[in-house]
Length: 116
Image 1 (cartoon, rainbow, N blue to C red):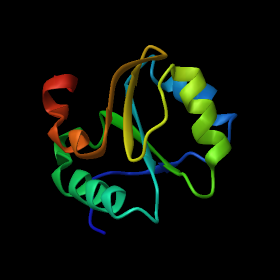
Image 2: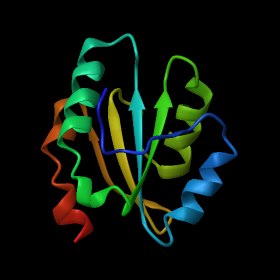
Image 3: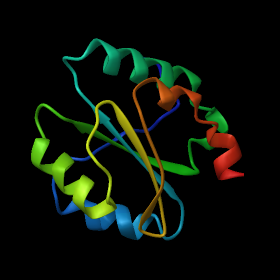
Image 4: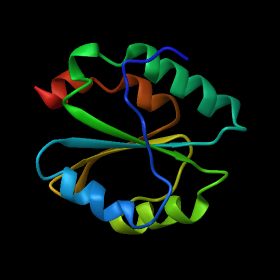
């Protein structure tokens, strides 16, 4: 899968503090993905294809494999006050969620407008 995104695997609950800290200096995205769901596969492929190369260094993008890291996904929901959905994209700034989208709504997000 070709992508401009340097995905960071989110595999432990301890990394949530890392996400919060990183979000103080740049935008952080968390993509929750179910590897068995055709909608999730379609959305992540479209997101990868549409991700602007100009934003590669401006957004840290974390990836959660929901089938293998359900506990981490649940903790992300608690930490950032969002109800779980899949696929789901959260954008975090200054330790709080500024955007939460799921399913095909993810592909409608204009990241360049958000990052400016």
